[in-house]
Image 1: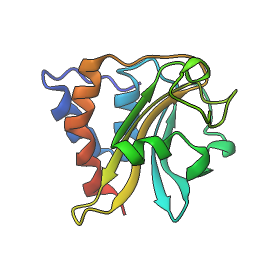
Image 2 (image 1 turned 90 degrees about the vertical axis):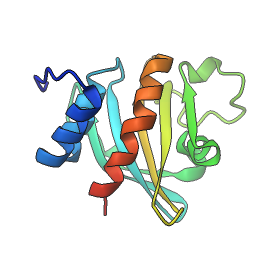
Image 3 (image 1 turned 90 degrees about the horizontal axis):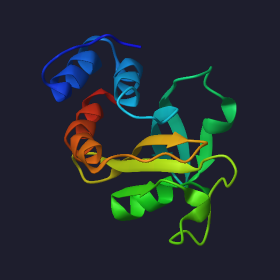
Length: 152
């Protein structure tokens, strides 16, 4: 993991993003949570493509690379701007449980271009139940838009 001890976490993320790139910045954000995966998915029609991803425990797996929007948790983030579930199989809000048995916890935030069209989503997700504190969500709301400067 990255050893960065800066007084301002948002400045640390921006610095890593500018000097080391997107995946190291995702690793830094992942390190702040218990989630296994942190990624940026790009919307292409009705499909989400993993543009950049960090997996804290293993090589990035192929089943995560392309996901139909209608079968992903990203559909809820795209619809509401942000979506979080800590335990999808027990989440009563979800009548459709995308990728049941694979993704159990998810935090997602829409990445919107300056022109107003969605680029895709920033997400933390895991195969196990996980939660994200409200203060981390607040932090992510401030820092995630910075990634748009580095995305194609």
